Length: 477
Image (cartoon, rainbow, N blue to C red):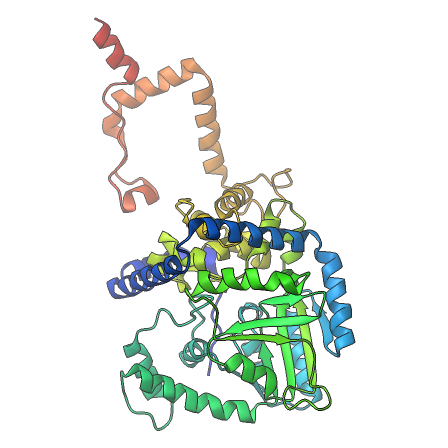
């Protein structure tokens, strides 16, 4: 059903970007969707004082959690184990898939039904299971649509935001047996629900993500709007939850403020329709829930970010998507152009740790540094500061103190370094500067018409016919 989406932002990013920019319909759809989401968020935060106070609290909770991450992870494992949940540790995506596959093969599972999980997208879970002959079926409506289309999500909260109702109507008519073309949105939702309901009953394993993992109680918190997450975690006999190691928080009391920030920032809702709290498998006398629950805790580069005091703030993210919704770049090129699981501003700062800076450095430069992302981030991640840091890392000298990340220096060019070296010399010595500016003003006719990326959308830069010092001398005569 699905196909592998190549992750190659370095080589193909510009080409994908130009493709979207040359598609007026898609640009219009994204602009309209982002405007709608921005308005929804504003309506949920009419009191700016309350918003800033809540952001301060959310930021403090996340920074406290990260400062105590090793201890909290050990506490979480101990509490979950005492509750009857089996905890697994995965350093890489392959490790995580191998753990899930081992569980599935032990019970001879043939079908896995999935709730929404961006971490499962991160590790390529569906493709790993399909390669082993196991069906991994998405039950979130947006995820189901993009899986049916053989695509990756274009947004971390609304996976199919790039699709119009006409696109979905054509897709269902072509891919779902017995379905005729209709653009009625309610009818399309009902078509999807009929397919998905059968899948819940047939699944051997349910897989979900985790929004927050509470260390003091051993509780996995999941938020959703469709009920599919609750079905995935209660109907099948085995529930596998997968999450990044940064999602742990210390206390159950920390959940409400983070939920308030998450839901209002993401979809403009006071609270999601379903808030699921899972603390263990089904106990004697309980009417629902799986007899077996597993949690896979994934690293995949997160410890690299954690080890750096500045980059650690990246891990504060609660995956609300507000930074994408307010980003002028994302609004114009959409999610697929980035070529990574996590697009937009948050993707630009988290992907280098997962894939290496050598594979993802163009994303750090795909920003105006306007600061809109940092202004709306509910947990106050300094995204623009981190983007600048990654830009410097991408052009750092190999083995220098500035090169600390995997893939550092990938954007460094000998020619560019030479140009900037000459520029530095010229601007640091007044005599050289006067001489160079004299030649530039007198030789302005020799300015090239093709100035690389600058002239793709702008007129060429041409030096003024007279320097400022020349104009001042003339005025003094």
